[in-house]
Length: 261
Image 1 (cartoon, rainbow, N blue to C red):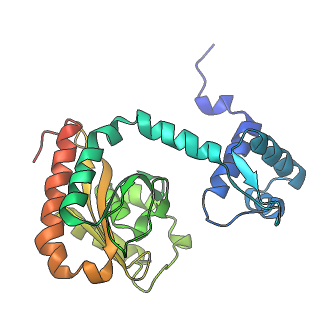
Image 2 (cartoon, helix red, strand yellow):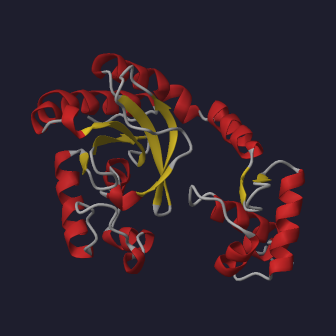
Image 3 (cartoon, rainbow, N blue to C red):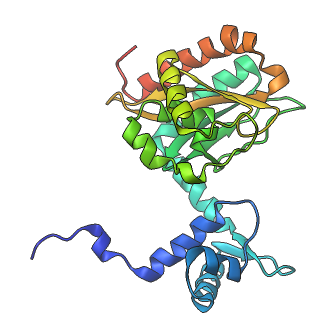
């Protein structure tokens, strides 16, 4: 008997349950049975049974007032266990702490997952005014420094597969939504070795990110610094933040076995 592709072993009910969780994880708002049914193209009764099962195991919770659903605490528990097991996080967290100590700004470690970046770890600064961000947050890659600096080291064909240009959304007037302009922007990022989110996802917030490579020289993550725009002037970014992040990005890469410079 020939060896079959793993996709041939897919269990539809499990796939549907995972689709429900992924849809709930896309937005901050709670979703009802009807909306999930519409988005996933599944029958309402099927969605209701899936939600009931997930709720009994703690993966989703129901708002008793609205009867809508949100992700449950079991998801947080799994995420925390993943982070504990992640060698990437163990190796790089001390470096994130060092950056926060030197800059007193929020610093995060993010990885590229399809068209999103996901924060694996975030260390907050001791500031009265700071950017809201936490581990587990997912942001469109094209509108974030961490996403752009990872996309910059992929081929054009890979970028075009990851970004659904028909559905690219402008979060602010600075969001780059034109494909040609974005691809040219990625070339500039690759030449400089760092990316800036100039209020492209949230007005009043700027971010700077550098790539992290592993022993194969492949970019596997990004270290980013986020702060209110009034604290991240062009001068501070150029003279303080970029040199520090490049140094720390290389240090993080070397901990993962990277031998380049």
